[in-house]
Length: 243
Image (tube, rainbow, N blue to C red; front, top):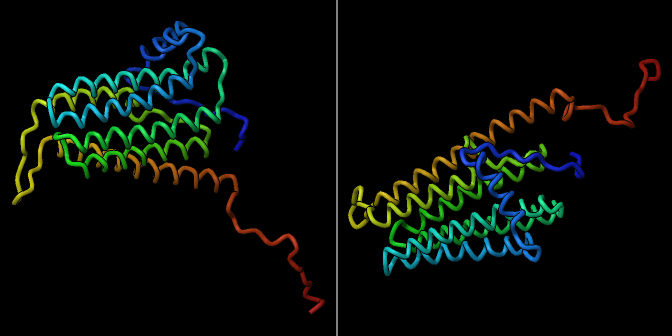
């Protein structure tokens, strides 16, 4: 691997054609005192706003507006911090990559925990979604190291699409979340079913992508002659006549 070579960013999503130019325009319009670090911190704060909005649904359905506002602010800060650095030619690839994705992982845990503490879904299922999402993040980061390709989208879906879906689904479930079935004292709601299905899909994608990538890398290594048994450099070679 070549450490000095930047990883290729792969982002082929439904929203990318309008999102990228919009982010560039917003980055150019920001005042000089605003930095990428400010936006990263804002995204972290927004994750707490989203989680708090979910928790407060225990007291009123209209707190979903706070949660949705948190999603929008998180999109703005999380998507704009890297764009701002690139527009201003102040990129710090290693620091930016590390801090940005540590904060992303923390945001997922905070948001899913808040969702699990809401009346919409069970906490264990919300945390299952967090685990599944973090597995996908691990795959993306390992792929970045192995092939210098930073994959931000899967099947035309990326972080922005996930936020939009989460906002739409949680808003729907806030006002309409019927019980699908009951077993003794256990009630399985529509929200529980949706989160379980989402987590299962993410885990399935993770497993399938990991297996296919491992097969591809093994094939490339074998074609390059890597990993094959070789005689030791200092192996003794005794001729038949010397025995």
